[in-house]
Image (tube, rainbow, N blue to C red; front, top):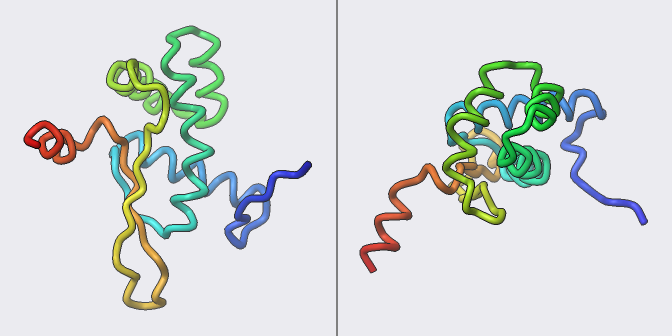
Length: 127
């Protein structure tokens, strides 16, 4: 059985670099705007990394560093983000569809970390 996924018009190395870059920016900025196809491809790449960050072990830190090769990402992930997502079972990312891009009519989306959006928390508690 083979797993079918979107190749995003790139070869393996370019696709891997793209997903690393998108994941880096989501971790550091908590929210990015990208195309819908890239957003959907990012979720299965980043969510296992976020799950791995919930266990604060040296092996987990090394595995995350092996993916990103960046100490700032590892620090942000294990020191700040892992504490916010500690009680969540999964579904760390939210994909919100946006209007199409003007130039080429590409479907756009906003990818954000669920626990970092206070607007949704306020509206849910207000109801």
